[in-house]
Length: 334
Image (tube, rainbow, N blue to C red; front, side):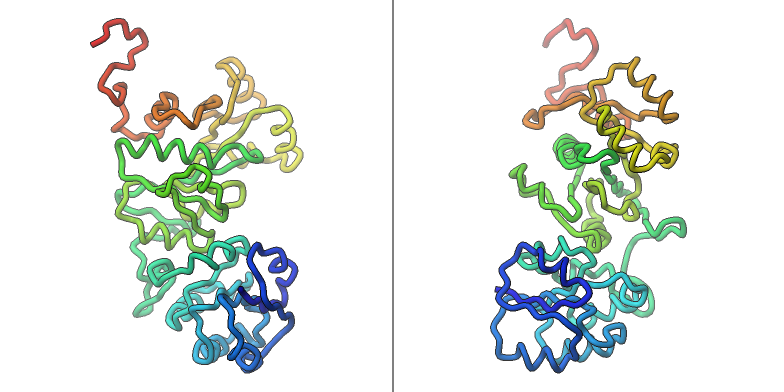
């Protein structure tokens, strides 16, 4: 059973899908928490950082780390500049606090899958410099690694199929490349019954990438909300149904203007070549690739292979996995 100490984020924490034995709300001194919970048995303490008085002073957190077992504490950070600064996050790690997040949904995962140092090493500053191996760019806070492609798959229309497409891409890429697939802030990968599929939070995504930089490709299912900052490239999924497109435009009339020069993928599409030209004309955009409805139970997706070639994965050529030609007229059988 777990306990919740909340303040600013009380309503959000109240909706957690975890067993709660005790919940308190308000602003507390570290000593208050120590007195209440020293002899109280619990599995994890889910701590809204704003529930600590003077929490932006790192010495407050230091007092907490000295007085309580921080391995049993999951801290929900606020969005303040101080708390999210590299120095503050690094200080948390130096105190042995590895379970922190800005995303409430990630708490459910951390309760049963606590972080280790390896998971947060990305944020640890040593000798006034980061321990990361990426070269940060001034333009977006993202990074690019040698010999590693980090491809984000992001829904533009609601539920455009990023999770299934990420899975299909990973399954096909694995035939030729060392590849990982990870979803952000969701747990839908479990339904594919594939233990190689990973899950992480938005906050922990850079650390996940850094600690898996020995692979050739990391596919990131960003869903609708995931940040693109950690990706070297992003493909944007649009399901071109009339209702979904109208909803998209009503939500933001400048959507396609913002997608100018981006890789737009029509997914779960029933459009033919002429329809695509009409779509491009009306939206003033360019379609990178058109993917029809696919059967995710099939092992060899020809259209996925063609898409990967378009993305520049040169190990996929015009030969099928069994060595037979995929020429248009495959008359002669071996």
